[in-house]
Amino acid sequence: MKFYLGIDGGGTRTTASVCDEKGTLVCKVTGKTINFYSIGMRNARKNLSEIMSDVYKNIGEVTFENAFIGCSALDNRADSDTTNALCSDIIISKNITMDSDTYVALFSGDCSVSRAVVICGTGSMATGIDEKIHTKSGWGHVIGDGGSAYSIAVNGLSEAVNLFDENKSDSPLVKAAQHFFKTDNLRNIIDVVYNENTTKDVIAGFAKCVSGEAENGDEISLDILKGECNKLLRTVYSLIDQMNSCDILYLYGGVFQNSTLFRELFTESFNEKFPGIKAELLSLPPDEGALKLAREQYE
Image 1: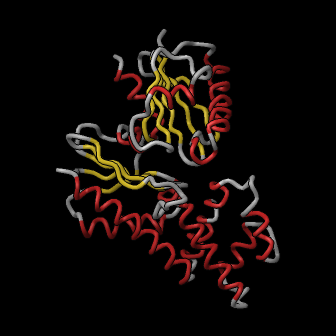
Image 2: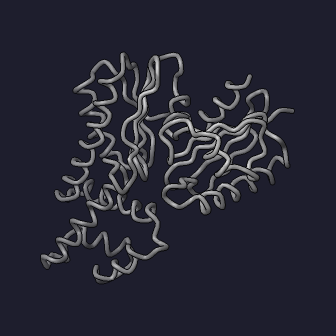
Image 3: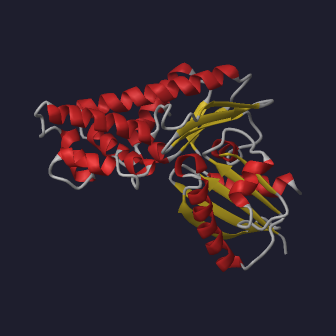
């Protein structure tokens, strides 16, 4: 029996799915990120190895016909050196292909139409396909991924410490930050934020608090959410303008899935500018889009 492997490697977590030659899903495993730019290649290989160890425990030491990997460290097709650096001696496959996580998400939707996908999770990125592939953003947290959980969180923390310095410790954002970082004094978060073991996904987790406070009516949190939403909209607008046609925009990632308010702000503005393009959450997870690519590319 033939087996195929599809992997979606986001900024926080990685999901690997396996199907047989009939397309029947036989295994799905979730683990930590394989984004080698944010955690380093050594840690990315360690996380991938742990994921694949669980996969092989489920299905045995098979050789895959093909493996297709979407990785948030990439914005286009990886060369063989990069692919081998991450996957060698970990994934046993006749063929391995790596591309961006937005690329595999594109193939989780309706492939019969021109389409785009915007991923808004720990980082953010948008990709569209008509006669060719178009990509926007994905610059990473240092340069800035507008609208991403990390960007929302950092702006939320910046406002929280400003409020704290202004002796406004009763402000919702200050209280939320102290609760999130488990301290009674916001000054103590310095030790946490700048600790070498505090990864960007940990910081990005504060975005849920900012969104929650916005939904509870805090004007400062709402302004942050609106500002980040506008940054992401600029990215998506530029993508759609570059495409010859687009029938649907798929939304994916933790910010869209966990914050109803952010999603509503985004879709309302998008629909006003592009009323003829449907915007909706991606129904099929990107790991299964990667699985589709793994099967179709070498059939």
